[in-house]
Image 1: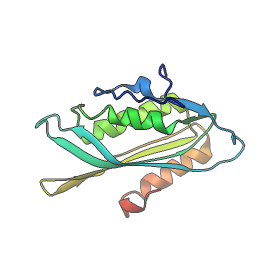
Image 2: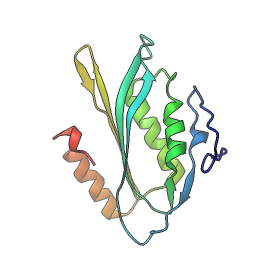
Image 3: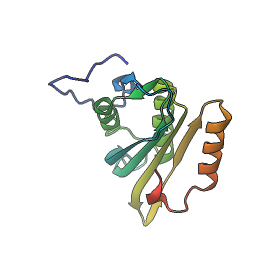
Length: 154
């Protein structure tokens, strides 16, 4: 968390994966449990084998604790994957782990709805819950009920 994009009038795009682009702000409602859903409909990374672009919609759902991710920094962070050559599963897990490290949320999931290549869509999901049983139960429930309809996750 070294850069400060909140309120900045100029935007610098980074073309290589950079988790330091992520920024947080304080959750003003720590006494409430509530969902935050962020959709990134134009996510792009590279296939590590063919070097061809892979496109996806990313869905990030979380129950905040003390800190929340700032949306412009998230946009710039996700853009930094544009030249990153990794498999879909690795990308989703990397994003999930970076967000957990940044915010330490009560619960977080990242769903990657990658567009078909060779007639196959890949939809990896990362999930995390803190040590509280309530959030572990949410994680277990959502994991068991995953893939019923991936477009209704959220």
